[in-house]
Image 1 (cartoon, rainbow, N blue to C red):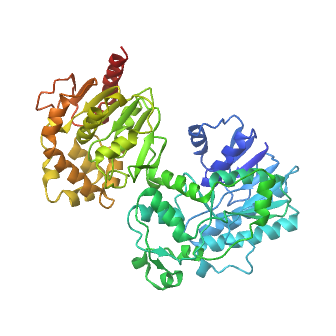
Image 2 (image 1 turned 45 degrees about the horizontal axis):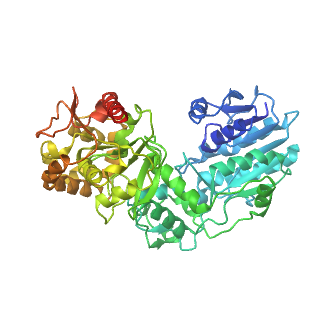
Length: 561
């Protein structure tokens, strides 16, 4: 084999394996349990050159394949660890990997992953002051360098800063999560706090090149242009359409205050520093290898999209591609194809664009599905929803079928009436303006607090749909500040606009198809074809997506004919 990667199921390890395989290398992945192969397959990585081997680095290693390059990405990266638990992997494990590598007859390089705050530390680390994670990494750094010198093992140490990318939910990600959920009232640290980043893609490319570098190097791999922490958080906040805190709380004060009051993990406070790091050798080596870091601000925005898409590790993205985009002066969560969609999908209440995931899986052509302004993951806008929809549609170069559900049928209908040349047809699913009144919950003065407290199971029962990831996504959004209130306001506004929408329905000039569930029938004549789905209620695209897809296919065929 060309290389072996210890810790191959971890955030860094799995991406490194993917990078090496993509380069055509034969890679042994040392794991305890094989969760790696399914992950690589999902990423579209050819695993023909992969060999899975079982290894526990907390014990002396044997029986592993001979390799040229050894990568130790294994480590316990968590706060609140016990000393024994942290040392078992971070210290003993690192030394076991080194001892095994020293016996390889054709070893070219051992690449050890350390940390930007711990490498080359002097003296025995203070476990009580630093915490078990950082102290064990510092101890390992010293021990690995000393033992490598004794055994004449060709060693390269990589000291990454905060590595960001899909799947990273620790450290800075926790700060972004609090920002997103409106729980970050003040920034930890000061106005000059420097919390540098590097992206996972850049870092694993750096690691893949590292065995060709001079032995004995210590590389601090981080982006020196990372904005200071207040600007960093401000960049992410602006991108997501949320408010960034203006106040800061010093690390010294946070150490003195009770954790129950601050919510700050004491082990994270040492990272709130103004220190800079010796990156010159890493920059020079990267340049010689043709590696270039992406701009820090762009990397932060992309990572923020990933964090929101997978709900900070609690769910899988339902639709892709995804991200925040500027629409009508506000930050809108947009999924799918922005320029050449076959269908544009507008969700009803109290849902978001994830509502369409089951239906999109049955559609052969690309879709565009946003979260409505102020709903789901989209920021509120001070412009009318009709203006927002017109701006959303401005980059579209096709004449898609516009598909709307429930409350969104009103804005969709008005857009088609004003821009009949922009769409090929209109499909209204459970149009609220020709159905019953909003639920008693929506009309109740307790609607907002009840929605914010509702569990996924409770919301599913209220909506009459099975509990699933789409409902879970909606409940997460309803707990964010202002979303539940805006949902209830929209439901009440819908009642006042029903007569206008009914009148407008008779005047549109594009083909119209209406789809309803048999358990949620129309209460007024519409003058257009109506498809009724047996066994469905107000959300047929969730409960009967295949049947709804067939009706959309029929509409497309009739338009094409």
